Length: 221
Image (cartoon, rainbow, N blue to C red; front, side, top):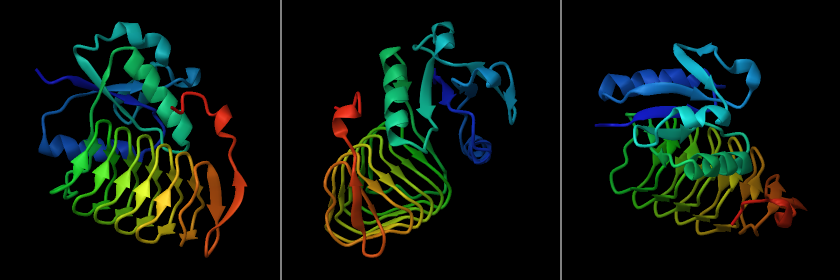
């Protein structure tokens, strides 16, 4: 029997549109939302209930429920909340717009792909990767765990993206570059050189504007 799906984060009204499209093509059952905002508990979000935050997880049997993380604004929050769900025993599942062509693509678990995403041949997406509307990942690129690719971003071919990387809206990453773990690519940046771990880059061409203290990123390993 297929597991029901718990959705982590009740924020973006675009998500219910995606759920509707998926439901047109499959028999997956979406149970409702887990959201740590206490003001949302017991409310309805576009037709599905918000059960509450992590405190309600004991009500759900991991043998019957899997989950997808919808959090996209902060890669560390996305990563850490996913780890909470996993430690509670829940398996990840994918939430992918049915129009996306994934032939010759290697997918991990917990992949969240919105409408208009293009993923080219021999791309590898690790667990918990999220890509928003109109993002492009070029051939033979790899994207690390818990990374986020924002709307309209373009990642050219043969790029290696590390864990927890945030790629901002309409950013461009040129071919054959390496983006280190927990780096941040600013919106509209044009990345012409490899980016070290923890760097925050912006501009055209992109330059390092600061470095994140990776020692403060708990659960980053």
